[in-house]
Amino acid sequence: MLINKFKPIMLFQAVDKGDGGDSSVVTPKTAPASDQTDFAQLYTTLSQKIQAGEYVSQKSYATLQAKYQAEFDAHKAVTDELTTAKTRLTELEGNVSIFQTEKATLETTVKEKETALTSTQEGLDRLKLIMKDHPELISFEVEGLLPNVPLDALPEALKKFSEKLGTIQTTATNIVNNLTASTDPPSGVNQRTVEVVQKEMNRAAMEGRQKDYDVLREEYFKLTGVPEAKK
Image (cartoon, rainbow, N blue to C red; front, side, top):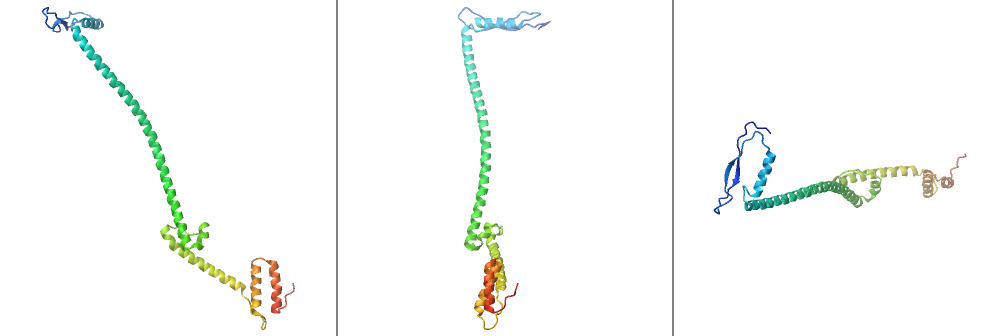
């Protein structure tokens, strides 16, 4: 760097009083002005003079150097510990991320299992109620024909279903009885026997038992004395 007008700078130079005084006492010294200053050379020269004890006594310099080294070592140790702590923190943060993912997965699984358990328990309670109050409707439950209502509304729903089923069964029984009812046989004929044979004959016809029907038909005509129509 070129400096046209370089102002004098003050350096410190150790002064040996020669009377056993403190050699660390310094007096200012004026540096000569120069049109061009080589700061690198200046620094090197200054450093050499300091190490030689020209500005600072060797004893003071050694003490400062030792103190500096101690501070440097302490700083390096803290820096190394900080680096280790940051590395460990990064590892732990990675583990936390993994654990959080696993935790979220487990929470989802738990919720699914709890929902399934609740549904299963409701199914068991439903079956217990049906078996206790309406065992005749179990087959309908197996086929999925009973009303799908909440458990607290199930007793009333089962009652209505059972009543309706009873009405249907009664109607069906009446229809069958009407189909199998006997006509009045001629007087003097064993009515009970004719009635029994007629019911059995009608039942055989409904069930498709042709051979039984033919046998019962012949028996019927014999009992009633009614001539069988020729085919």
